[in-house]
Length: 548
Image 1 (cartoon, rainbow, N blue to C red):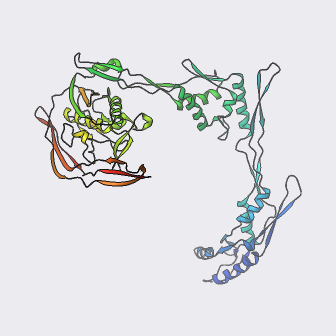
Image 2 (tube, rainbow, N blue to C red; image 1 turned 180 degrees about the horizontal axis):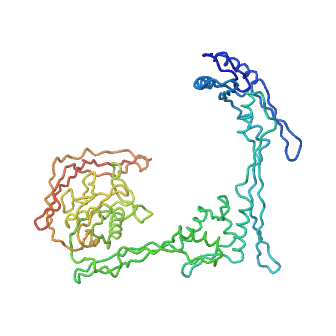
């Protein structure tokens, strides 16, 4: 018997005692194939109507039997001592596909559950005042085909030839039960009697039953809960009326009095705490307490209080930057002044980094900027904010002269004539919101006040603070590898009248420019750096009109 199954070994109802594995497989396969020809009929008796019968055709189920269980059963039986009269059951895995047939049955027998509902009705009373009526429509259980059970019944039939003909169903319960609705009804009736009032200062918002009904979420348990997403939307609508951005003051330094005054005072901000408001709202709805909530609003303090500005160590000029913009078109001049106004009066605390882009913000028509020429994607084109780099360049020069660390600076792609009016090349800094920024760090012991202003065609940036005795030495820029601009380029433009010529790019010599800056204090070197700019040669480009 070393190659045969022990006595009383069965696969389902098929006896494979004293058979070899090959013989057992053939015998089991014969029973299996015979049963695959069967059509199983399941009866269904609906609560109303006549009984129905559903047929499952096993021949179309693509059924197969995994005989590896016979190998496992054979080996396991050899690991145990032989015992007479002990049954051994082997259960091979059977796979089949009944999805399409079960879907057809389910389409007839499945009945979705019906959630309990709150019905809120307002009808006028004889006196003309509204009276709310809140009713509950009870939830109803549904039913669904029990696919797991019916697949087990089919598996058992294929192994034993027996099955239970009653179609297996399971009860499906509604997500929102009648018990949950009872609690919701109680809360809503309380709100009808006394609407919930949200209060901040002299403002108030009333949450009545109709509004509350839109905020309820009754799918998460027996306790009354607010739908968090919907309630946050509601609270954010209130926050729009409460919230107020903090306003940082803008200041100016008087060199005569050496005092700082505010031309735009700082102003506290405020912000509704929506998380805490949601918590208070939930607690109030479920508690027997007064139906009034004082909304939690946080005060946002400005970094610098106006009254403290003369205690920040702003008492002398640390460095000045100058540039000229003669010959600029009106829109460029406007943008230069607008940018300066956004930076003028800004305070930079000790150890903080000033960001040009963060301070000025997005540079678009929506933020007040006009179109002027900018360098963009290798071309000089009209775009919002042309001229802003005049400000970043001038601020760069002030920072250099003040001996402050430069954190980020990018040179222009080519030499721009505005930045060389009275100055050598290489003293420029470009910006492009939000990716290309100019940044510096205040590493002095006091705050730094930035003042930006124009006089005629000259732009000034002054940095005020407390000098710590640092001395700045800037070498004269060295210009090497100068290369002439390429020949001018003329391109046909069908949008311009024939014969009209419009210049859109200007010739500029290419060059490598470098200069050194050293900053010392009491004989100690704080900064020793070399600034390099690699300017491309630039060709003049003209558009020639071809429009007839």
